Length: 252
Image (cartoon, rainbow, N blue to C red; front, side, top):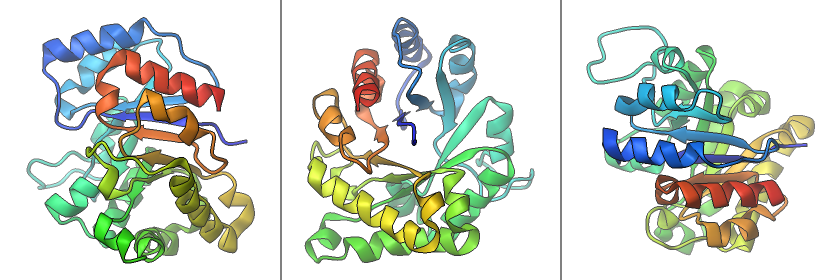
């Protein structure tokens, strides 16, 4: 049985003071032991989070990583080995903002996925379509293409070592959310694609939904059979909201 995952992507938010306040709130919450939890803070606050979360079920993740595992002359980058050394267990790869704003191609995303696995991290592979692509009926083609490069390199078993996050670009930070049925349709399509290659492994892959996930819509989303939790953006910057989303995952 797949465990749900609730992951918070803090993006480029926070100061030492605001992070301290958020961590204090998170430390007061009780979480179900049936739910995997992760936060991805800015790298500057990784040590602060690590120290504050000792004994907590919340794990750490990076928001991105370099496409090579070993040290090198990549100014400004953070290697997955460095993230692991800092206490991370996860790392996001292929987030739509990295793809659209920083020009990360499917091939670069695949290299990051590989580097993360090589360093013992669980890569969270983000995939999703724009509003224009959805309106043109291209969702399956776009998401399939983003997945296929990693599938070709690692197979379904490799993806089972990580997480897939379906994040429709049109729902990220917009306040718009795919309906539970819309999200389930894509999640089911993703799992069916995996099952064509390896049905047993396909049932093991965590596929989470991202895109304006909030406490008031989390339970209906997580109730869908192929939605295994959420990748949460803005709502993860509020401890009570993040806790409510985690509780919804525990009830699903």
